[in-house]
Image 1 (tube, rainbow, N blue to C red):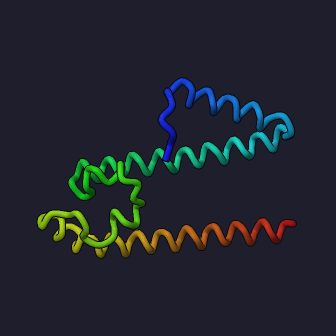
Image 2: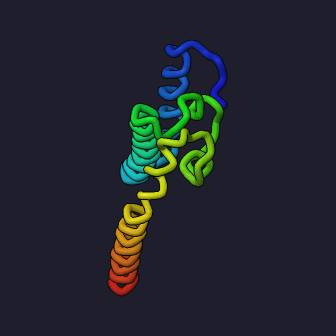
Length: 121
């Protein structure tokens, strides 16, 4: 997906885009956009690191990060896994349930915060 350009030019492009964005924004708007971009960067970094961990554990095919497949394709089902990893995947049902419960709690907390903000307006 990314073009084959030298790393210095790639970094310079970020500097140029940053300077272009600051021209028509207030300090608060710049802060909001900057924080949003940092969050995007953190999501990408966290995903890449976690995929590396999964590869290290043998739960994800090594080439999958190079093929552009997303996490849903990589971690759902038993595609590309050895017989030894299939048992591990079947035992993850409890982990999946715990993850779902945690995500539901997060959604409820975010909805509560949204409602609080709406009520304060």
